Image (tube, rainbow, N blue to C red; front, top):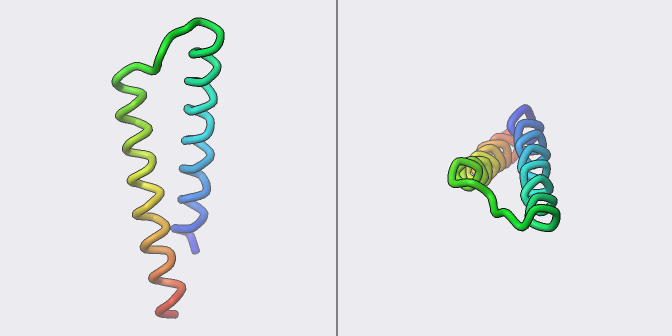
Length: 61
């Protein structure tokens, strides 16, 4: 269960960074930096791993 909550938290962070990038793209015509793209990739991977382990623990219990 904690893995599912962690995945929801990571998804919120992912949405916040995407919103920041969209705002910056519209207002200042700038894209995200390489570090922000790396953070987005890490967040997506973390969400997938957390959902996978959370789903497995719910199925086995």
